[in-house]
Image (cartoon, rainbow, N blue to C red; front, side):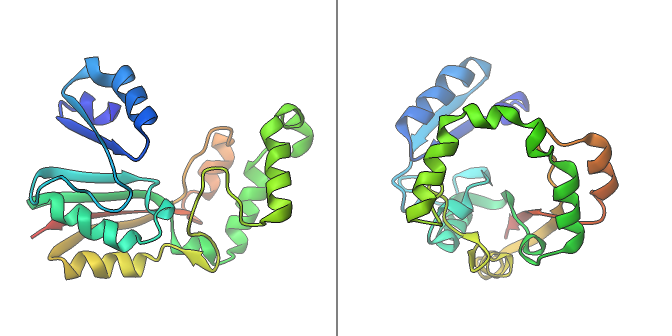
Length: 203
């Protein structure tokens, strides 16, 4: 939201959480033309067809059971010639057990001996408790985040093409996360990937 407002865009920030939308409004409403919309968790109603120049999601689709229906809704609400932008979702390569990526993760993350603060985070103990009863428990309620259950880019791209969109970019990349060593990241960023971005234009 902040980035788009800084580009002088009129922004509609959408989420299922009313409290989160209030936080977005409080933080960014003075920076430009900002509207908020609480989603119903099913579709993008009541947004009319062909309404926006750009519809963007960032780290969203893996939370949605019927994520392909959401892709179709993104296309529906974008004007002809408009852009659908989907980013920060795990790439297919992330699930491929790449030895290079495993090497990167083991190298770039600080060892537990240096991360002593984790012992004082109560949520870490709560997470272990939940996972004892449900190994797939995620505090964010994530869906599609396991090797046998995750979003499939091939299906997303097919859905975009079936809804009269041209895929103008599909790129895999290695995401940089807070706490990574910049030097180690630089050594691996062209050797492995864990995220993907797709940009499509509606016909």
